[in-house]
Image 1 (tube, rainbow, N blue to C red):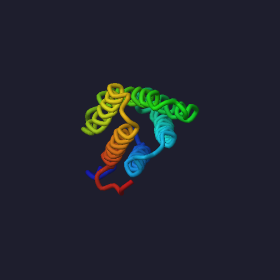
Image 2 (cartoon, rainbow, N blue to C red):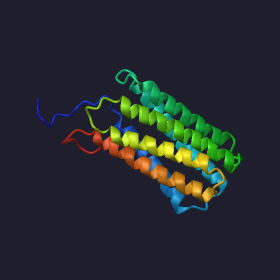
Image 3 (cartoon, rainbow, N blue to C red):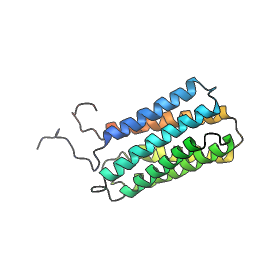
Length: 186
């Protein structure tokens, strides 16, 4: 066996991490470039992000249920993302106050599951820090939104944009961490 032989990871879903990361970065950049988005555009952008992220997490959870004993945590995270996305599409006229709480709840719950998942992973890889850091950022975003619900939509756009860009970068870092030494890029 060669030292450079590909290492089998417990999960073979790097591509989904890259897609989730790229979607997060694109969402964040769009929100920063056009901070004057109307409320309705913000609702639809967040809804699309949460829905796509949730669907991918659900797919991954079912693909990995044979090798990852806590696959259900990713499934729950995905279901919450889909629900948050659908709520924003079915009720686009909700007030900014309610949207802030929907996003805050989604961010806190998603962050808690990411932190739990990071500590539940076998520590043989040494890459859990990115997942845990992403979870902590999610929880911080949610708490900030709970504490400042009357903050303007512009502040909300900037908070969410920065969070999405950082989370996207962390997911892409994790995807490349799963790459075996000497392997071709994704």
